[in-house]
Image (cartoon, rainbow, N blue to C red; front, side, top):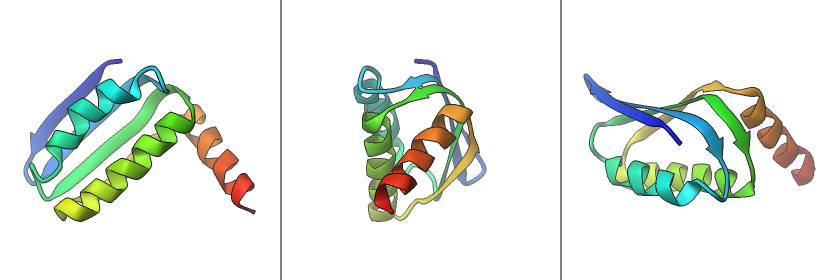
Length: 95
C-alpha cells in the first residue's frame, strides 16, 4: 500500500493509495500513528483508496482518537467511492 507523507507549513499531508483493509491496516498504523503531534494539523487524503473494510474504519477511528489526544487537528480530504460506501454502510447500520 503506497503511502505518501509530507509536512508543509504546520500540516502533515498523508495520501493513502490502494486497500484500507485488514490486510494493510497494521502497516498503515505503523506509519501514521507515530506522526501524531509532528505538526499541529494532519490532513488525510483518502481519494485513492480502492477498498475499505471494517478494519479500515477502525483504523480511522483510532487515528481520530489519537489525533485528539495529541492535540492534532485532523481533516479528511477526498473520499474515494470505496470510502464513501463504507461510511454510508456504517451510517445505515447505526439507524
